[in-house]
View 1: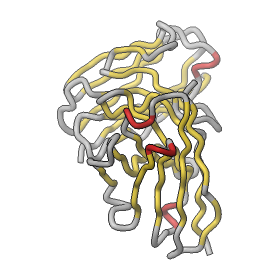
View 2: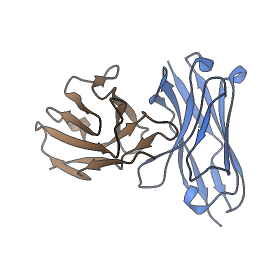
View 3: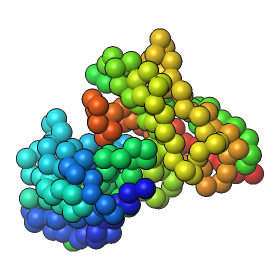
Length: 108
Length: 119
C-alpha cells in the first residue's frame, strides 16, 4: 500500500499570503495525484487532479506541482473561504487508493 | 447536475449489520466506477471500497475486507455497501463518490450518511 504523508499538519497563514502544502508518497505515483478541500460540515471538493490540472471552477490561485513522490499545493493569495483542510490522494495503484492525513490551513 | 444521496446510516450495535445506499442522478451512472470513502469523527479520509462500471472489478480496504460488500444496480442508478460484523472503529460518515473518467480520483461526492457502532 502506498502511504501518503502530508506536511505540515497545521499551517497558520494570514489572508492574502501564500500557502504551500506538501504531500509525499512512499513510492512513485507518477502524476496520479489529486488534491481536495474540505470545509467543516461539508463533503470534500476536488481541486486538482493529475498533480497540476485544476478541476472545473477552481480559481487560478490554486496550483499543484510535482511528480513521482513529491507534490505541492500552492494557494497564491489566501482568501477567507480558503481556510479549510486539504487532502492529497494517490490513484496510481488501486486498490487501494490512499489519502494523506490532511493539512489544516488556519487563520494566523 | 450531478447528485449523490446516501442513506441507510444509523446507530447499530457491534457485530450487527447495516446496508448503505447511494442514489445517483445527473450523469450516466453505468459509465462510471463508484466508491465509498469514510471519515471517522474528527479524522481524515479513508477509502473503503470501489466498484467498476460493470461490477467486474471490485476492491476493498484491508480494514473492511471480508466484512463489507460493495454492489451496484445500474438499472436503479444506485450503489450499495453491505456492512456486516460492524465494529466500533467503523463509526464514521460514509461518503459515496463518483470517479472521473478512467482515473480513480473523485469529482463528485455525496453529503454522507453517518454510521455509529455502539452498544
